[in-house]
Length: 261
Ligand code: SAM
Image 1: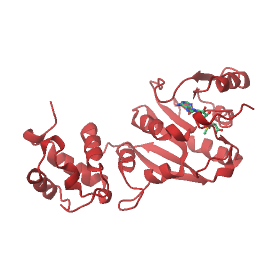
Image 2: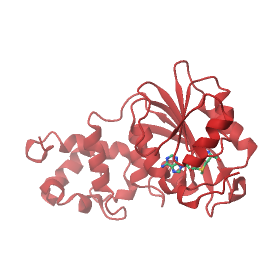
Image 3: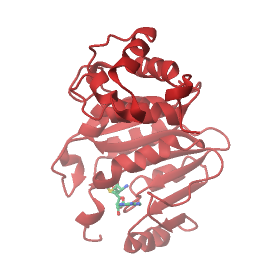
Image 4: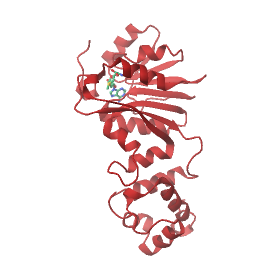
């Protein structure tokens, strides 16, 4: 066994039941490639191969890729950083016990990719809780809405530190993310920019986060909130995605405050 490297978030899964449950949740359909992110020693890889679909394994640690190639003959394992490695150009399902230090950016990248058909990711529990948070709760914020723009998220299971070697200092959870069948907006970029602006300070009133954005004044924004049916006193942390989308669709048609050409 290789000595676990902290810099790459190497906390290897040691819970057989969890392995079975994660692999079962992938449910690949005909034509789907499976992309495993951070295969480590291969605890998930062996079971994923049994699903009988082409599998691409992206692992940053060259020592581990060497071991995986030796253990699984013919495995397509690449020494690569999942933050920027090419992803398949056709439909795929992503799965992985993600390294906690880069779990959120990897997740954000994968769910925004149009070829992703499902993602099953082990994450730090706090990140998983943010993905499924309800408005008005402490966990609710930018990541919640970012996730909702692309996918439906549900928690498959929660695990304590003892399920890993070495045990991490945090609890973990497995999240299943399914891309939306119908987009929630006609202007994804505009919506993401508005979400980011609206949640600059999540405890602040929405209107105060928006003032100054693209030169907007209080007088510009108040009628937009009324037209969108959004309480002008609402705080960012209480806003639903439907409300942000309502504000966006009222804001962007106005030529003077519309999108920069
Ligand atoms: N899947 C294995 C398991 O469950 O035991 C290992 C999980 S471990 C939490 C995370 C794995 O991701 C490690 O093997 C680590 O080397 C790898 N890793 C870390 N950063 C990475 C990155 N940016 N791209 C690809 N793999 C990465």
